Amino acid sequence: MIGVLLINIGTPDSTKVRDVRRYLAEFLSDGRVLDLHPVARWLLLHGVILRTRPARSAAAYQRIWTPEGSPLLVHGQALARALGATLGQGFQVAAAMRYGNPGIAPVLRDMVARGCDRVIALPLFPQYAAATHMSAVDAITAAVRDLPAAPELTILREFWNEDAFLSAMVARTRESLADFDADHVLFSFHGLPERQVRRAELPGPDGTIAGHCLSQAECCATLHRSNRRCYRAQCFATARQLAARLALPDDSWSVAFQSRLGRLPWIRPYTDEVLQALGARGVRRLAVVTPSFVADCLETLEELGIAGRETFLAAGGTDWHLVPCLNDHPAWVEGLAALIRTRR
Image (cartoon, rainbow, N blue to C red; front, side):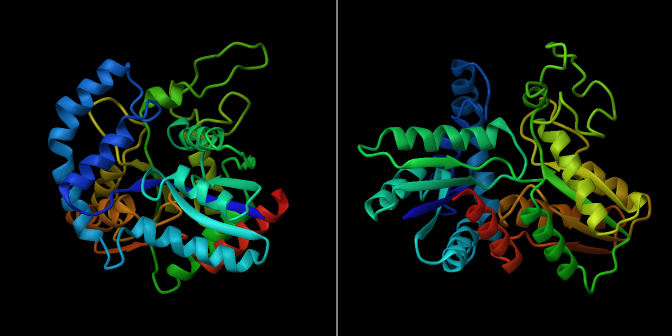
């Protein structure tokens, strides 16, 4: 039997401050996420972040929590059920979280106990970043290593350029915007610290790193040898593909990056600043699409759906429409099933 492990970032068990603190401690203890010297990371985490952020984050989670629990987990489990039904006999599909519950290791052990001798792991991050994709790879490979009888493991790569993803995004966006005539479409992606993006620059044909990353405004305008694994470049490429498939005029869409943490520079432009600028320049009806999130979560529902909406309306906008994430949309389920069947 083939196990299919759908891995997302994670969620606290509840909106209680202690559960949010526990989740943030695990998440931000990962050296791929908070990429500082271990001593500096510990001091920042335990001396600053965990003293103040859990209460604020708990309040934000309370605004979007559902009777069934965390939206990210609810949507992840719904996707696993739908994908399992579509793949049919011979497959077992489960959702797991890189941080929090259900964890990768126990879900993997359960798969093996149920007879899976092969596992296809899919980190649900469309664009590549060491802080997300590679962290998931670290966790799944460690979990397999710890098993007494390890299954054959296949880990799928980032999928921003796969038709399964792009077609599903277009279907979801068209359906959602069928009754909303937008003046402008904003593609909002999760942000990353600039230093992490710079580390992704690859050597050129001569074997040297040119240092072009973030050194000029148009460094991500095209994908090439040096930036093909650059998160920011892949985000812009994703937006270009979606805009083309949606037939959006060049001046009717833009890209921004959200969810920055701390005082160090993150990749720009920042979503909150772009929302203010769009409202101030006369955009009245704004649609927001989130192509780095495949399931609705705190960052889409609260950061954009509540706080982002307030920012745009306060800047002069009048109508706001947030396109839902793919979640368990039928086009996404079918696309994922096709993608997995080609890797079986």
